[in-house]
Image 1 (spheres, one colour):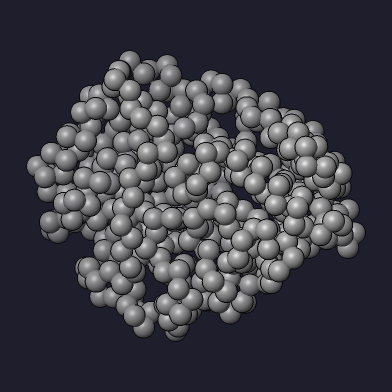
Image 2 (tube, helix red, strand yellow):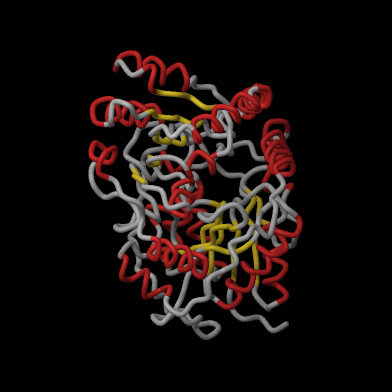
Length: 442
């Protein structure tokens, strides 16, 4: 295959073969690919040629990656999330040199979509927030079949995560200066705590299901606040909260003083929360202080769809459960920065007014939003299910090889192959310092 002159570099990705398989497809199409491994776990999940092992310090990383981009003629950078430690510096260096940055992660549309978009996600996404622009983007586009086509594999995901993290623990000496690039607790602590919590949640499943069934059929007025992970970059980078506790305190306080006295509030624990922070105890203490203990509930499980369908409203920082609320036609208030926080779809007034003044989203706008997302920054498929990954690899490789990541013409048509006419607005890259300062040991 004739070389196209394009050089695609992959940094850290999901603990699976997704990046490996996408790169293989790109090489078949004549593109050059390179993987930069930052740790032992990265190396285990790369099964292809042209791997570079970076074993230097974090302090030297910005110079290394900048020089690598220039020396190797890199044209595209693909990575999982733009706010991991090493990724932030790589994204900054890439943008300074006109290198296309493609960010991937679990999809905004769940459960069988992945995110694959230019420059950044969520608060940094270039996807339009103007209703008129979204309607124009969706005009003439075919609405996807929203029925679930692919099942992800939770066991494979958990095993991949364990292998990646424990490889770094046991064989960290192979990359002696590597510093974990996310904010999760130490792998051993996180794994043990998660296992204990998942076992406990399994034992409470029947109780949680019964609670959901009872409240959703009772006719009671209730609101749902799905909690997010305290170390999630959606909280760290794309909200003004220092952590989930600040969000819990804000929501409970507003609910206590402004929601109808007969209304109830349900805080639903994230299914992967290791419970190293006791959110239920924190919720109870705050509720007691506010005098609303009998009106606030903490839920460790249960069907979120059933809860949302019968809720008076949903409050979220920026969880993708917000998109599910829009799909189900329920009023939604977003507290952070989210790609779906759009006038007409979400409540734009203050949280204090949401409890009494919210209205359901504009159904046609939501339809256009979902269609536009599916044709621009989403790809059908999964990271860990076999057939879902095959579909995602095909979609990602096609978009990368054609240079069509997150791009559409004004009338909604897919542009010609190899066009670089980006029609989604550019959002300036915002370097976040929410992850803390790098200490001198690096």
